[in-house]
Amino acid sequence: MTPFRVDLRPGESPYRQIVFAATRAVVAGELAPGAPFPSVRDLSQRLKINPNTAHKAVAELVRTGLLEVHPGVGTVVAADWPVSAGDRRRLLRREVEELVVEAQRLGLGQEEVMGAIAERWEQLAGRSPARPRNAGARS
Amino acid sequence: MKLAVRTSGLTHSYGRAASLRGLDLAVPEGSFYTLLGPNGAGKTTLLRILTGVLRPSGGSVSVLGHAGPPPGAAFRADIGYVAEGQRLPEGLTLTELERFLAPLYPRWDAALAADLRARFRLDPTRRIGRLSRGDYMKAALLCALASRPRLLILDEPFTGMDVRVRDELVRGVLGTADEEGWTVLVSSHDIGEVEMLADHVGILDEGRLVLEEPTEPLIERFGKPLRDIFLQVTESGASPVEVRA
Image (tube, rainbow over all chains, first blue to last red; front, side, top):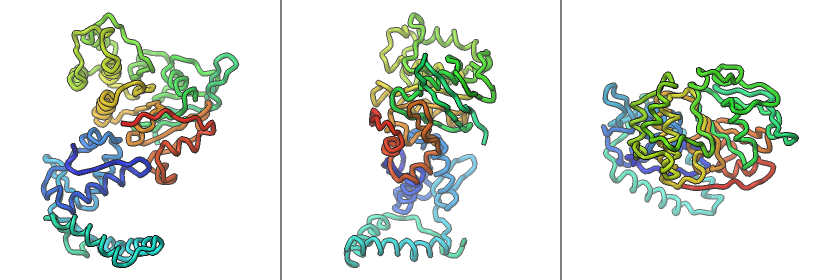
């Protein structure tokens, strides 16, 4: 078993699915800070995915700072991670706009959407011991 | 990009029936390349040409830098090949077979063979002819992997195997391929199994390569599962046999 839940769906990039699943596990506290993260080889065998895909996913998680490589120890979950102002802007402007447009297309009311966001937020943040470092460190 | 396998304008005919009609294949070194195609598309013929079992009728082939493929011993040692319905000497036990193969392969890895034997839970004292189908296939794969080939070619390795055996075969390959960075070329009509495995896909239909692309951009571009992409691009529209885990 992987230390986080991944239910790989065909038709979507396995790389993106793994990066997302690991990120979700970290922000939800399922993967505690300092917890070991599976090696590329482990990840590849457990999920039956291409080793190159596993490698790319781990490299991306290290790049975004969610994972840290400790020589001699392996890859572990970071206690906190740097957040760029650019990433925050992207979420608050473009991705929120996409969500709003899609909600309006589907005829969802503002309250329904806010309610769903609040529900998800609770689910994920309720257990989370890990937090991002302040914005502006990188952009 | 360095290529492990390259063919250009490859043709092959059985009598008057053309099985390969001008095939340009490029398998990058270090890739896990899956060759998909309906039955009769030419997959097995192509793999037999690459391993030197069959001669092409026309075009050129280059495998691991050998323009050829030449039948020499060095070339054979570089390729691990498990044919569809691969036969092994059935009167031997696995231990005896390993002892027979070891001196033929300069990079034979006895420790890996032992590791795979344990992982596959194979009884090394039982005659190979008395193994179950799944264990027989695992024994064949073990022999191919323990020779530490630079190119591993598997022709329909999952056909007829139950979920558990398929799982073990896949993990056996992944557990060794990662370390060595060798190239894996697998033919399959079993799309469910390979979607997450392959980083390169080639789709063969009626002796032609109708598509060849890295998996990731392919799936992004079509925005649908490999199975549906396969159905869309194979003009024959023949339904692939799909076995899902």
